[in-house]
Image (cartoon, rainbow, N blue to C red):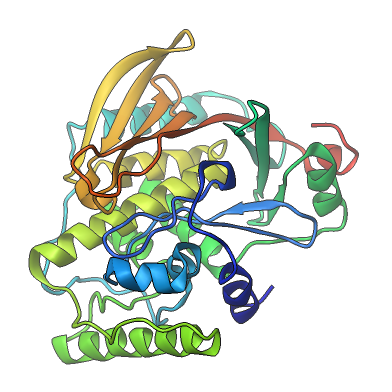
Length: 356
């Protein structure tokens, strides 16, 4: 499915609902959107927000705007310096950095990883109380296969229906770089995984140009759909830019985790990147008998309508659950939602044969 087909499809999607896994909102709101592959496999998109007014969101449809924000960005090489914002150095003493080092040590001390792919199963409770599952397999070669049942996942793998997008490749590469290389360069790579509309690493003039081009592209795509939003806004700078960057880093990093959690390099890299977000706090809990670290993101970086708590196993960093909590101070608080996760190493040949 190409970008325009996706935009047209999402134009008919109603406002986000829990059962649809959507947290899509635009103006100062967080977004998690989903589409379907030809095999009906669920594709969970990262959560981001834009700077459109809420009136504009109503006119366009939240899911369409959220996807446009992710896809309607300019490309270019990975920058090394971000204008208007200081680089965020890794928090060396963060429990997340310590756990990332522990994950790396566990890999070195163990035998070669089993299988040739990482599988993550996300489960959410539907309105009727039944579980709704989505399966994601990330191969060690970089392929991505998805399904909403063992059968659709099997079909995807058997047909070699690789759904990896450039965005998938970018976020995984950034996570791996954070695990084994320069975390600050990896942070910039993760921030620009969907494009560089914010102009990171560019001169002010070129950054303004990149932003204007992205805004114009979004306006055109929405216009082709018969939608209209308020005119383009100036490129965010200063504190506004810092907050937006934190949103993008959270959304892209957690997306990488939910796709490739059972790959230790991806997992360790994501932990290091999340540790650089100043609006994130880390606590401890016991969840389903597991000692866990709770990674909390404030409404400030999630659009204002909700906060989020990502819980990971404190011994190996694997995700346990991701929760959204309404912000009572918001005029339009999000609905509470939770997705639980199971991660494992698998062999593609077995998945293709229906052994999951």
